[in-house]
Length: 104
Image (cartoon, rainbow, N blue to C red; front, top):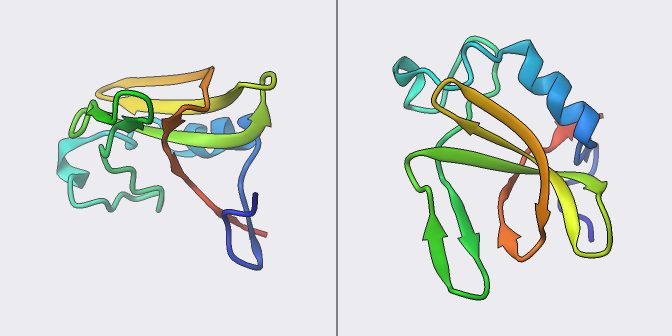
């Protein structure tokens, strides 16, 4: 499935980690609550949506971003950003997370 417009791509797990490392200290700072930071990453805490329960989770508390890297047939790698915490892990694709397209 293509999720990014022409000239842009969905980063791999390694690519997402590289983006996060550029501005890890600024990724989650209350002074950037409007979605703007010095690194241009601008993560907002939109949380996640779980398809089976039709419920939102962690809205206002965490930002989740899918990578294009699959872990297996049912899981993919993602990045979770919360207050002072950056996690890179794999999880079920039954969650709907945000994506971050990167310019080619």
